[in-house]
Length: 168
Image 1: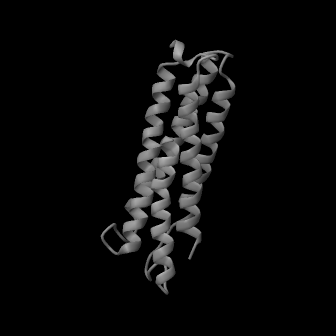
Image 2: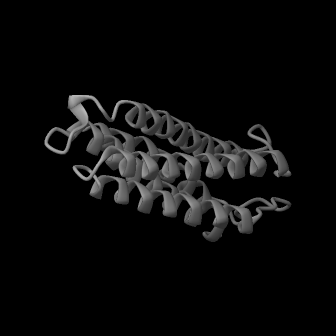
């Protein structure tokens, strides 16, 4: 249910974006520069992090050291994604108050970044708590929920990345 509610949250942003795109003859507005290269690199890093969290899930029951290594790799890739996002915001030639496009761009990417940050915190908490009985091979529902959340964050980003950088 939680992921479904999160999906609806981001669906509202997509609806607003495509509605504004439909009623504006020029979208994004003239003068908006988007740097696709770093955003694509961030997308690749987030995709790799989805792979590493999958590999962590496959290691449950085979020793916490392997799981921990994959979870740390996932968190690091997520942090690299965030660094690229922050750099993109700093280099943007528009702001959240420039126009509706700027508002949607920063709202979509900003809320997504908050979700990535929350995911990193959850992953690090899971890494620390791996020795607890709640995170064993037989009792890992909480760990799997965190990992599903991380996959969700990646899938949502794919939609945001495709929408912002390729739908004109």
